[in-house]
View (cartoon, rainbow, N blue to C red):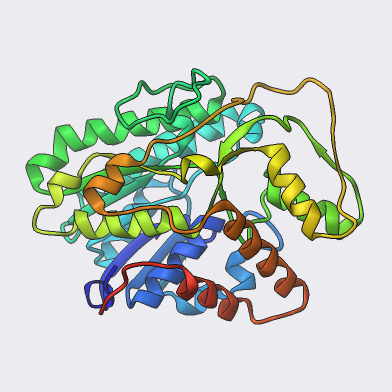
Amino acid sequence: MTDSFWRDRQVFLTGHTGFKGGWLALWLQDLGARVHGYSLAPPTSPNLFEAASIQRTLAGHTLGDVRHAADLTDAIRRSNAQIVIHMAAQPLVRLSYKEPVETFEVNVMGTVHVLEAVRNCPSVRAVLVITSDKCYENREWVWGYRENEPLGGVDPYSSSKACTELVTSAYRASYFNAAGIAVASARAGNVIGGGDWAADRLIPDFFRAVDSGNELEVRFPDSTRPWQHVLQPLSGYIRLSEALLSSDGLAAAQAWNFGPLETDSRPVRWVLDYLSKRVPGSKWRHTGTEHAHEARSLRLDSSKAAATLGWSPRWPLETALDKTLDWHARWVSGADMQAVCLEQLRDFPTDRGT
């Protein structure tokens, strides 16, 4: 990453009011980019966007829905962006069972609208579509999925992310390669970090239980996930964005995995035991009841990103959990959370230059 590369570069970011989008907006701004956000209002209360005063850092802030094609196109045109990073999504597996139509509308047709808007915005040279590790046809393998593995999904959320990958690939082949616009997709594992208050996610549920003095009920304590701090895949997104905007950007116009070290794919039980040892009074138990289907084992193979982009995981899971605990404790104490976020951003090891 280089500050000179991003200095005053116009970036259009969907989903900037969400957890990952908020962290990425702050990071790009810290690198010198001018970030134009387009998103619904923050999805939870409290939320990172307000806690870290992210709106104050933006060059543009538009409350909008990616399902509204005309508004979206107008916003991208006004931004004069060179790169579009599409993160807006319905991101929750369990909610997708309750709201399948909305999940497909937002995740699939929302992506179609973004890519259609780019076709009508001459300033854009590159697009990065963020999907999920859950886009793969999960066979409960003990090894990591590579980018050329079959796509699929049992639940509506996973299926919608597989569809998003197919849409991105089709637009790339049908329109963007010939136009010289580099379009890539990025797949990351279960991200954790300060500022996530989403429902039905392990770390936010843990903190909610701790703050309310309740016992955390856990559905699948033996499920394995590729846990990583949110800054880890975001560093990959930034590195990939630089590659897409380079003179050889079309070479990077493909799908990419950004996952943790193999040793950091841990069971839910391990994560909770680690947190419980560091948070006095915290308690959890296995509910032992039936729930909607969720994958029991999921791992990513990020060797392509390592070999081609020079990207690699930097914070082990223990550090990711410690940073998350520290962020939450400082939020509870009333600290300046934008300063805390920037402190953690600058503490994250990168090959950052000027």
